[in-house]
Image (cartoon, rainbow, N blue to C red):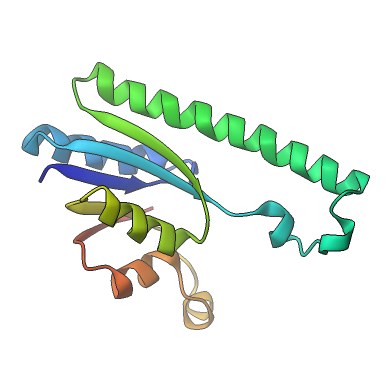
Length: 149
């Protein structure tokens, strides 16, 4: 197992995912790729194109830029922790649809294992919504380690 991809969301249990990746990397001498996928915040709030250059758009764009700087800094810190422990690591901050981007990057990087977290939701939520983990399980040809969060 040469390459392990860990998909993180910067929630409080991210450390649990990274700890699992570290244990496997130490056993197999693997490189760890830490990936965080972010979506387009302007699209997420339904902002029309004709409104793009108003003050609200500028404010939203600036908030997104600050959030991305913070995320980039955290990714770098996680990567450096692995490197300090003698494990090769890289951090990736990518925009796009989460499942598609994880699978695309996994193919490009020749990933041998994808590690993801699974958040516990209610029965109703699970019945109505497809989670990222369930979608990856369905679509991935690469082995997955799903860690309960």
